[in-house]
Length: 138
Image (cartoon, rainbow, N blue to C red; front, side):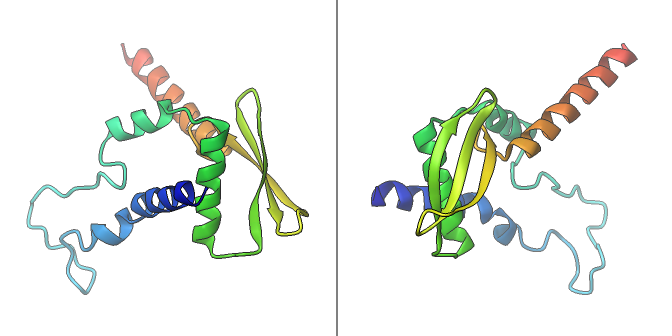
């Protein structure tokens, strides 16, 4: 159990460190952009559309979702919270966040790829709109 928590913590820390590693992207300390016509990299944390596509198609097991959620709770820094029951739903998983004495704090809806379900649905909606716009142009 400890090994999986450590691995999940490292994975979560690696995924969130993109902002820290991005650094100054060619701007001046006074906020002025002086890139002088050079192409600037606005690819963000994912690196490319391929990275987002891979993330959207990923599917985790209930045990993996529990491990990822435990890592997120560790990163939040509240030792009074822990992961309760993880149950499978039609669209993903329902994850109970509880206190150390097992009192329910909240229940989170998580997609099969580990994203919050609401975020996952919004991304799918935007994708459908883009595809419809492309089809309308043809």
